Image (cartoon, rainbow, N blue to C red; front, side, top):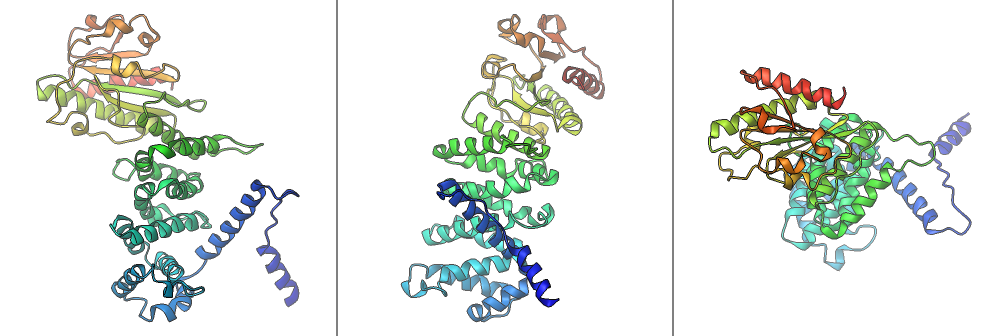
Length: 417
């Protein structure tokens, strides 16, 4: 009976990896990825006590003495170039890595703070060790079973923008984890948007990634959406990838990426040119409230882009919280009321509406009156609605809350929901 049980346990630990007879690069990569996955799963399954028994002879201090452990780690990092400390199996880099994994299992925020300090250090050895540890953390926790909780493990994302500065290898480690976590709705949203509505760390990574590796990122994202065979791509992952592709396209001023079926873009353009600060704030407040309503109801399928009139780069992207001060800061300079900077870079394909909130006449509106944009643009303004024909005017309301509701209903009709 014992032999049967042992055999069953062994069979559960076996993984059969199909390879071709010539052991091509693809087969070797498959074997390597499988080994990495099994190793990561074994490491995430270790309890803190098991790590302690392995590391006790190296640390020689109480596990609760975090300050001394941090000092010991910093001392080891200083000795990385010392040949005396580089002999297997006691090489110092291996011991540092294991200690970091133990700290992650014991107190993840402390662990992240240590690694972040190394990544930000001017010392090259600290940076290299920090990058190695950060990549390991992302690759190991990518294989946690079950997927780690957002509340406890989102702190790892603080390392993502810093890793982007270490070339494609750093960014790829973050993306490796994001690809696995992003199939879960809560992770998909958290990777893109912070709890306070600010830009998520994964979008920051896209902004920070060096220009020479942007094509690698674009190819990787496209690969995620190319389902093979009968594989179905989870909707949360689709939404996350589309947000990343959009961020990448905007950063390089490329055409907006094509969205999956059922998803559309919506443009909200706010006039911040009025000399009267109260007028600017009123329009910005109205826009902010409408954006909040749209995000609450249509965030899964509507990709909102928010602009200031006269600019070609958005103030906010899909799902992001937009405050009045974000749209119309008090020190914002004057901009002419021109649509061309924005519409010239936007294809009309997959755009369900373009809402203009203005306090004055649009200087180049006639340039767009005979284009497909005419059917997509709606204008809300305090001035004479006939100034905007043949564009579609939205009736002016006397109270802000009424204006908000009228605009929201108008846009919902445009979206077709």
